Length: 137
Image 1 (cartoon, rainbow, N blue to C red):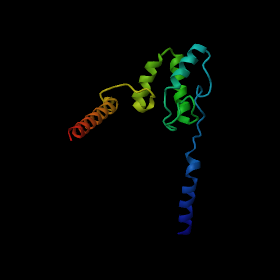
Image 2 (cartoon, rainbow, N blue to C red; image 1 turned 180 degrees about the vertical axis):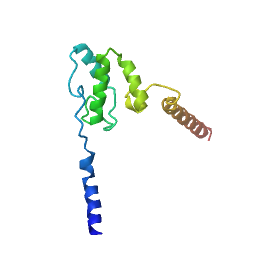
Image 3 (tube, helix red, strand yellow; image 1 turned 120 degrees about the vertical axis):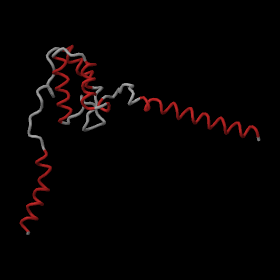
Image 4 (cartoon, one colour; image 1 turned 180 degrees about the horizontal axis):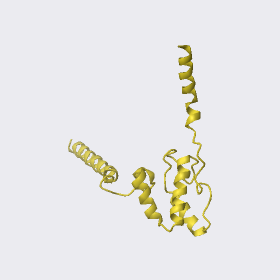
């Protein structure tokens, strides 16, 4: 019984070690493109894409493995001649609207843009009603 408990405890403690990726980073994760114009396009796009692991950093600034993979994908696609907006659309389709620092207004996201204006309008109506009531007294 003690051996089983020790084996389970050893597996639990070894879990973080086993979770480490043994794969090498993608080739273009940390290496720039040879063409400076293409690298400039890639950098500009990378600064507008959010790291899914860090969430507060762009993939240009993040050292997370997924950010390196995303940088590699962007550089590969730009090297192949794809336009940055097409790459952004592909990333949004693959990872969702959250990946972009500049989300598009769609049928799913328009309430996020409309809610502040609706709340301001409601606050204005409530304030107006209260001021009218006070002025009448």
